[in-house]
Length: 204
Length: 204
Image (tube, rainbow over all chains, first blue to last red; front, side, top):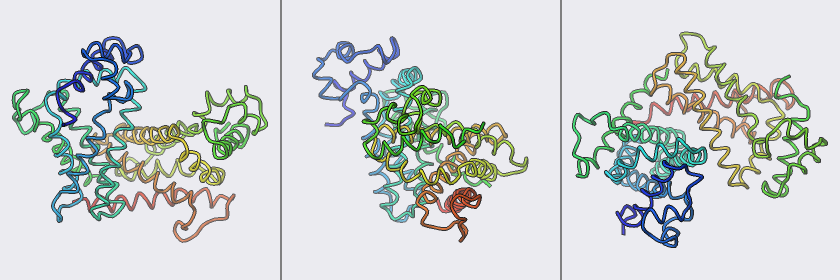
């Protein structure tokens, strides 16, 4: 079963983000989240160790997809081309459900210092995952570390633009819910990576 | 009075790192730290809100020095030249006392998940401080963000090599305790920045 299945797990995530936004992260209990999602508390705990981990549940999946995409890039791909392959693999896994949730997730994070820290640590671990995958391809250390940082900057910037949804990637956008919308995040993220690649020539 | 003064504050830091290394971070109390440092608990709380903040006490100072160095770089400095000025300003403030403490600090962090998180969040906030200082100089956003990340990578890498002390910067090293040793960290950090600048040409 995919971790992205639209079942109890996804209902729990949506319920939690709604409650965090309505009444704050600290005031929300696991029992309330389970009730809103229409499941029992033990179903909650089958999916998540606690309410905080719920919001970063996608992190291991994301790290795995980034790593796989980088590992499976063509042997002659440059470090940034391999990073682009990883970002594309991870981005296409984030469909319209993720996009719909994004503004509420952003509001919940903005309202909680603990969630902000968790979110920051998540991006650092994604950079580390990309760097490790590049080193495994034989990319030398300083280049791999730098490419991993560029990858995570591209992902953050592309995701933020995609979540706001105020700009079409490559001038077109599929209707929400179809496969076109799923591909869209990848377009934003790869455009951000291109911008950063261009910026690296202006560092002086 | 400088925040780097070798008084109660520094004795508290040394005592805390010793105790964290000897008996673990969680098992160490503020009372034990104060006793080891030869001060009262209320002296501890005049310097630090809690034991965790003690280990990151230098962060605000570091951010301020990075920001000042970047702001005061010549008007025609490139983004990375401005970052180098910030790194040099911050590095020269870290003298032989910091270097002596570094291996124990590293051991304490390695032994505590909470301290690892705190340390990670610190590096992210230093990158943000450099990015903000570059934007204030008129550096456009994607270039400023990238230069800030390079700056923090250079600081981390240079600091790690300096703390291990197994390589001479520029082929020479002053005796510990003299001004030569203070300048040394800057040498390591600027060499790391040069390495990263060269690496950025190989990203592909």
